[in-house]
Image 1: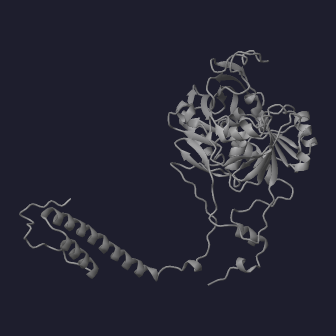
Image 2: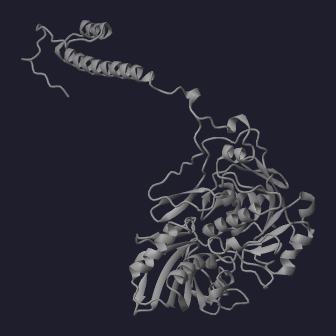
Amino acid sequence: MLMWSQSHVAREAPLYVPPLQTQEASWSISVFIAVCSGRFLVEICLVVAFVSLIFRLLAEAMATMHAALASSRIPANSRLPSKSSYYFPTQCLSKRLAFAELSGLRSAGCVTYAVNAKAARSTPSRLKPVAKLKVAINGFGRIGRNFLRCWHGRENSPLEVIVVNDSGGVKNASHLLKYDSMLGTFKADVKIVDNETISVDGKLVKVVSNRDPLKLPWAEMGIDIVIEGTGVFVDGPGAGKHIRAGAKKVIITAPAKGADIPTYVVGVNEGDYDHEVSNIVSNASCTTNCLAPFVKVMDEELGIVKGTMTTTHSYTGDQRLLDASHRDLRRARAAALNIVPTSTGAAKAVSLVLPQLKGKLNGIALRVPTPNVSVVDLVVNVEKKGITAEDVNAAFRKAAEGPLKGILAVCDVPLVSIDFRCSDVSSTIDSSLTMVMGDDMVKVVAWYDNEWGYSQRVVDLAHLVASKWPGTPAQGSGDPLEDFCKTNPSTEECKVYEA
């Protein structure tokens, strides 16, 4: 701020006016001086006039520079379009999925979240749109609603959810989808259209209520894939009822019962998927989806001899809020008041996706009074001797930045369970808790969101199924024009002329 004393400016003293560069600026200051009277008003007017002059001179300089550069620019209508690019907002290192059909990711600290990725250029109009597969969700509970939210967040998904089977009806389905105590309010516009329909951002979703899969309208609605989320129909005869009702494929969101149903864990054995092998597949459990990716890394890098796992798992709807009857006497006790030891088949199930580990792993679960996010504690003997905790973490980092990008993450920050809520990855290694005992025993701790992260993998598996669907075009390069030109090289827009 300019400071003026009476000796510098008196009412009768002549005013000093800086040299003016334009007639307009000179006129502006003259007007200010003419209308001002009194020492303080003159001082204020001088400051305003001086600031005004500076802004005008800067504007003139910018205009001159813009005009000088204009002739060197390439006209917008003459620029060649670049390949499709994607923008992923990020606060730190971005963890992007290694699967082309999946959404982009953004990271906040150690936690990786999904964001919509939008292509910078639209598909050429001559390319015919591919019809989306019709999807039904059977059981609109925690996993069913999480699945719909995850699917809704995916850009250009090959799926279209058109119906859910919810025993609570339209009112409950719409309300619990919109408002969630763990996930918060769904940003989508969810409305009740009529007694059997809701809309999600304008997309109509029919709501049916029938506990018998054989009576569901899959045939008349042309359902391609059923997401079986009840936890009830997990064997061949049960899940097969959806096929008998007219669906073409069933994805069970739980460990399957029976050797005739193949199990797939994205990031581990999804490459083994064969569309013709079975009409029913399993996405395994949330704990197996956490355990299998980093166990795969450890077995490949260190060689696993044997080991045990403990999952400290959030309580689920299968437990009792207050003491009540349950086939598992421990789960019959109040979930919010106790640490409840119980069984888990997650460790044994790893051998379903990594057959070489059959008989080498086992484990238990401790259900604790938290509503979401769980943690796996694995201790194994390994073949490789003389390793350090840094060596183990380095192997995880390499995988997380390579083949398991978007599936596995490594966290160096001392966080707690709530910090991993809504994390998209299947497992996040807590690097500070990695230990090596002696020369052949390794302890690893990994966090996972047992609802949201698992539901993301269900969407991934459904996308994988869709990519293998009969009649589905081969996966492209990500550039629609480039894909078009591979089969139509003689068209004008595909010709390349030498200068």
